Length: 462
Image (cartoon, rainbow, N blue to C red; front, side, top):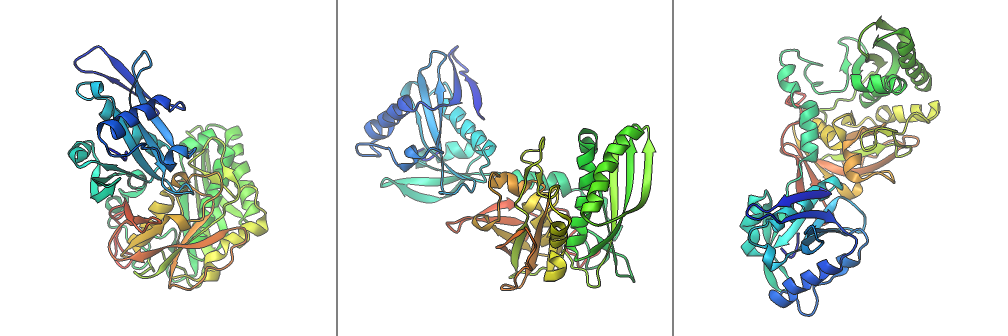
């Protein structure tokens, strides 16, 4: 491999010798081993195998050491782009001759590299390997992409399959199609929407429950989010909020008061009154909120068609909620009522063909749901996605972002100004199913292979 976690232990099956794989800042022994293997032994490079990746401070080196500190092998992981988009390249996997037969050093280094890359937020991880090693990598789960040339010698470009978004979507949404069969949710044209138009009225209803563990751990924040997620659902359909109903479960009145504090503050901030609800004491923590809004012409999630442009409008202000780093981005709790109102009117002012607010399925999973409801697939351009400073792209695309709205419309139709939010065209709807990521080199990689919910297109009744 001239192209490929944190700690991986390996023990030889036929010897008592052991080794550990770890990241290191001292690359001298690794560089010496590389020179011995790729320059002196294999003749792949003339003079030196060093390149720009060795001087990039983002490059990570993993080495396999004996208990005495001797380096048995090493591999490096480098970012493929100047801006970190989650595209990593493994390279310069070198194993000392004495460690190639029985110790399993090469296997351990490859597995550690994959684990490290995914833990670091890799969304694309590739390596070029010599043809003789292609089958070995395939047995470890890698996929052959195409033949290529490195330093004038034939190689095979291989890719490690990363299923981060597919796993998230499956865990959050895949059971819905089977569970909801026969309920005819929303009716024809509204299957898969964030809310439901009430027949023969201009009312739109939405309902969300907050994860009980979050209610128990952070009751004030849970109360705030109970309002937030429902207003976002109404926003996605172009509806203006009218009021809220809440149902609270609490062990006692003191705990319920904390949940209600969050509800009260969010109700005031979003200018949406709590009209009533239900409270029960002596039970485990629970919270669900129902919202009502008005929209003369609701916007469906399933109104998209192949050829339409996909835009993401997101509030990039704020930061990770304390205790929820990488999972919840808080862009709302410090916004003024006027700013929140500007965010909440974006879909109504834009009137796109389709819209959906980013939910617990993350941006990629939510786009998959919009595409599924529209009877098509989607492509997302990773380099064009509005992303806040301080957030890795992988975390940003899989987190709950506070306020982020996906819209689909004919190319050239702009998204209306949304106060503090940032909008960008960052994808398109295409024929097929699932979601693909498009990279700066034009390559497409699979993010989600099939439908997300199983509810199917909005034009059918589940």
